[in-house]
Amino acid sequence: MVIRTAVTVLFIILCLVLIVVVLMQEGKSAGFGTFSGQVDSYVKKNRAHTKEGKLERITVILAVLFFVIAIGLSLKFFQ
Image 1 (cartoon, one colour):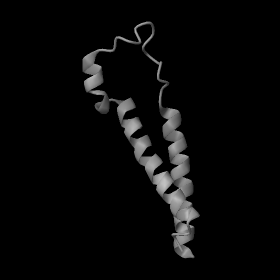
Image 2 (cartoon, rainbow, N blue to C red):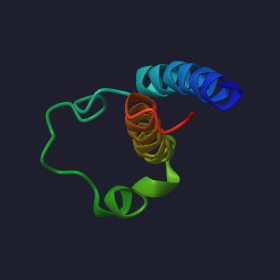
Image 3 (spheres, rainbow, N blue to C red):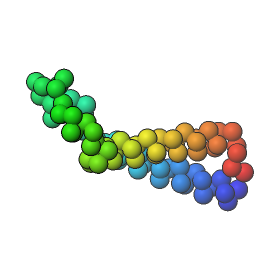
Image 4 (cartoon, rainbow, N blue to C red):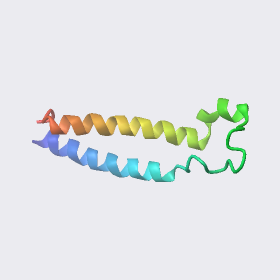
């Protein structure tokens, strides 16, 4: 029972952090203007090192954790 409560609290915190990280990201069309199809190749290659790239990576990691914990809680894996 204690483990399930701890995992539930962790799940709620994870949900709040995921919401904040998603809201911190810019829209897909932000910053491109009329040249949406002509993005510099240097920017494409180094996207992982930018703030947006890091936020996208954190979002993917948090989303995977969200689904794993949600499935675990729904299947009563944490008893």
